[in-house]
Image 1 (cartoon, rainbow, N blue to C red):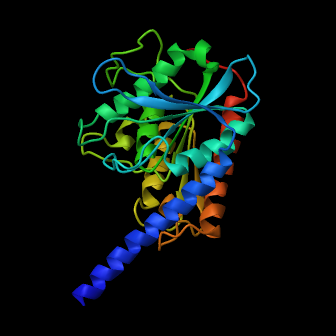
Image 2 (tube, rainbow, N blue to C red):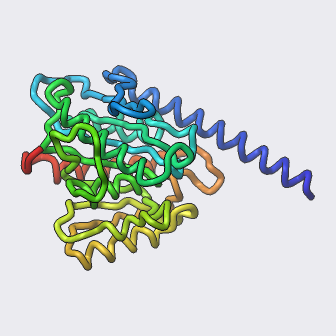
Image 3 (cartoon, rainbow, N blue to C red):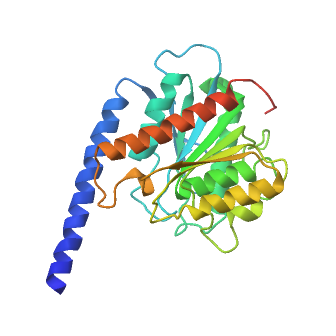
Length: 286
């Protein structure tokens, strides 16, 4: 029995790796020809942290709205970075709509405990605002999108933006305020001291959540908890449930298949519609 379980475990790892290779190749094809500025350091002190910037193929001289994408991985997975295929897939579908997309890395918990990852993400937002002319970014139209623990970080960038809760030491000539947030199957707590729910308050920016109906890693109830707190505080929040979808839009056997593609495209379409609704009008300040 033990030998059989070991073989099943090894098989699942091989299958997952094969599925990831398939998905990566698919996403690579979507990004063929997209202009990318890679590995731009956004912090000044400490371990260098980087971001990538993706541009629409027909880039004009005018400044464009920007979408900051934050990868997941439980804040611990060293194999999931800013070029993670789920993030790039979303970017590949978003940039042709006229958005500049930015994907970022951040400090993992084993490197620095929270709130360092939160501060890193907010620092990245300040960096792109500080370099907006160089990168052709409209600072009044910036959204943040995150998946899983990246959704957790995107939640803090949304609910705690433009506040003094977290001390940002770099690029202080601008704020880390954004226009709206999109959270994909977000976890609400990675640490007892930093529960996203506790940081939701009246006056926060509009946020939407996209969650798989049968997510076995981050239960759907976590998005319901965000919804409840936002309603209590009068914050604009919309919950989108994708029927039949699991975490990361894989199936339960971690296969990359047509269902996976369908769920992912559904999430991307919801995201783009939300971005179009909230970033089409210039408002606010930098």
